[in-house]
Length: 331
View (cartoon, rainbow, N blue to C red):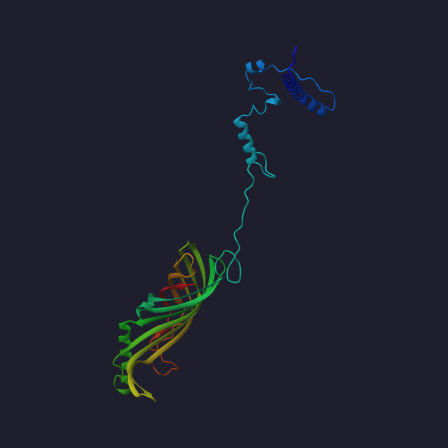
């Protein structure tokens, strides 16, 4: 019988390869157990494929197959509620933040400016007994002070308030002066008479800002002050002025014929509104109205010439009241 050597070599090589592949798992298992190779349990592929998959099994080997969506939700909730020192099921305590502190040499802790200044002007309206002889006039105002916070401050203020004279008052006064002139010289001395009053003052006024928004604010203010009242009566006169370069020329001006001064302490109180020109600007337009009362001490009427003073207008030294209305800028 003839043996085909090539076919025999191929059969032997195939047999050796199969034997090597079969021996490799056993050798690896033997290395892990450091002992003899253990026989593998037979696997019935037919029974495994035919038997249904048990998804309700609670064995540890089935954990990956037994995952439910609600389990993940519980784990997520626990992770979100995790906190140091907080009880399980309760959120962590809310952290509280204090207000920022801006305090420096020009700024208060709440961000408001420590110092404020203002200037303005407006008109004046005499009231009560003052209205009987004075007419509305004009005013100027300037001041500044310290803000302790956004709500409270104190201002030092200068005011100059001016008034005119009622026609009836001027008529009574010119008749009085002419009668005195006739008694002394036998003839009248005045053809026309004018008059005015001005009152300048320094006052110390606390300010309370009771409303403030990004653009609009409201405040009340008031306080004591020192008031100097000056009353004068004038008549038109012709004056002459000489200049060394241009020579002499004449001009017309009001010449005082009688005047009175009166110093007193007084009080003012009022309220105002502010409007920011820009949300990012410090300048604010303000409008305010106040009531002013000064405690002047009235002097008696005396034109006899037998005393050391002449008083033909007692109203100049009586208590004075008026309402000033002011418009201006705060910065």
